[in-house]
Image (cartoon, rainbow, N blue to C red; front, top):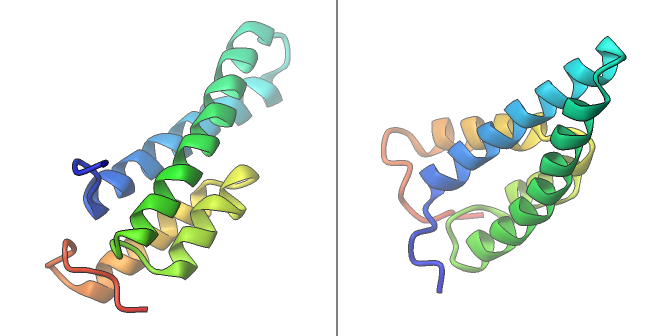
Length: 104
């Protein structure tokens, strides 16, 4: 199950989620853009649920650490940037071979 799930794919999905959240914030702050705000709001909400489930699956497969799984799952609802930053930090910690299993 979820054999396609890798650390790199989870990282890029996290970046995508952060981009959606940025669009949501932009249209929300700009006022008068109820349509785009609603669309990006739904994408963020559903995206957060999907990212949370994928983070749990990635942790269970030892692709990511429990700390990164919590960043994505818990903090990601109000600030998905934390998960994206966490992925970058984790990748740097691992070095160039980011596909090796998590150790913590």
